[in-house]
Image 1 (cartoon, one colour):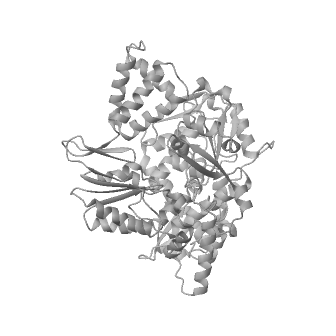
Image 2 (tube, helix red, strand yellow):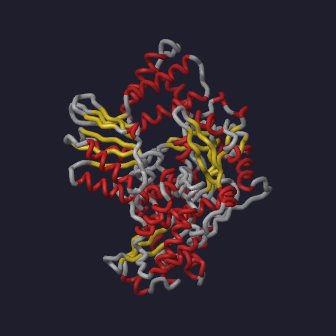
Image 3 (cartoon, one colour):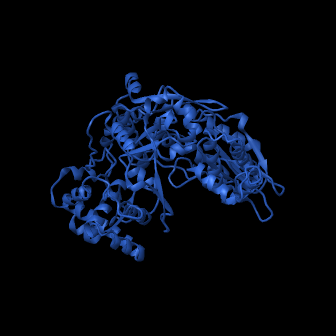
Length: 610
């Protein structure tokens, strides 16, 4: 659902009063979405109990550089929790009386228009350069009569809202019953309607002939890793919740001023000869089309206007983060990078051994293939993003674009120049920044051959390989030659001018019950009935005891949010650890803090977690 909303939203407003870590903030700034994220902070005097998150307190509020790209708001939120039992939604929250507090509403308006009195958000359908609303039609190589229709999440969302509005109007109870008792059939029906609507529009604009429409098969999909069925199901569930408003009907019955705006515009394309819609239907096969997203090499002045940088300090090191400025240049740069990622996703392959920055893949998925291994080798790439060589990256992208069958040297030179311009637009001060939405994809392309080479090396020797960004793991059920593996990794990385961090090299053996190896914050632990994946007991104890100390000392300040973040991470990754957490808290707090039962603790825990 978070991925859908990130792609659908025109803008996302993040209120940083309780977030404790940069990772939590990243959840709201989906790198694969085209929404623009606004960061808003409460004034110091509006922070309830001074319980602002550690990350916010140290890295944002007290950082003069980053404060230039955030706004301060008057923030006294009051929310209701609604329980919801379905296979899509467990619970959701809404403002009291379903009304946005005036202070927040005014701050949002101010942020949108930068002190202008009135504002409008344009939801009009644009051409393919926007990548917000698009449809792409491709034919299957093996079955020429089968067509794949790729519909953007944003366009699909508003088409479905239009269907619901057209069919049910304001009769939400009928829609709810239809969805509740005929879930699968209803979702399939909606998908069928979308399919028919799109096919009719393709015929109208002579993209396909009526005969092709009758004799061909069409598979509609969406630009998310989940199936079209699951995406549509989540969209319908959200729209029901949004329109129904929890326990009573919402005052805001649509997501836009005219609920059928997008749907009506889309339907009108079927009967009108509208060239703008024809422009949305593209194959993206021609070299010339790429000039739309490949700018000239950016100047120093452009970089200064488009980006902002700041230093984030941690106990171990300092790191410079580069992000998009709030100027028009910054917004255009972000859109450009989104288009670059979309282009690369269509034309450049990705290796299955790489897990980072990919929709539907997590740290747990990266660790899981190693579950049954007994011998492990771990390595870390030194200064990964900042060490990626732009010339090598350009060559790799040019070589990997299979759609361009370039024979003539002149066209090959044009392609190389355009890719070079594209890459230059993704660098800042000659380095690939961590904060650009294009950096994860480019870093993955950079190590494509490395992943293939090491993956093949391991496969031929019955070993398992996976990589998560700069973290590498190789393992086997049988004993492995550490020096040979180390040499292979070093030699392969040297081909792209990368090195490993010698201080983080590690080899581990799980020979006895209780032995464990840690990777990406998770432990593979050897047990009698086989290995398991869990969060380490010492980490659980440390975080829980720290929480108890805060409560006992009545030190409810920014520290508590950091600790709550740790506990939530533990329970999310390893639910079995919740008992250990509760056991420690009971032993430390039930007697010392005069709690009469564990229920008292749970009340406090929930209050501090909110």
